[in-house]
Image (cartoon, rainbow, N blue to C red; front, side):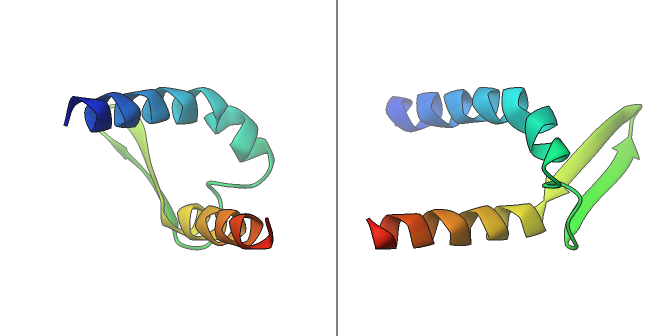
Length: 64
């Protein structure tokens, strides 16, 4: 269980670091992505971007 928690923690740190670069590519602004302000902070729920990235990774893995 500790490995999963560590993997999730590392993944969140990496995603937080590359989020500005991904926004320049248009991810995070697709239909289905939700952005809102709550408690003085901007929150993002990138549902559309997650689906797009999942399909892209699945295609890459399938081709290899």
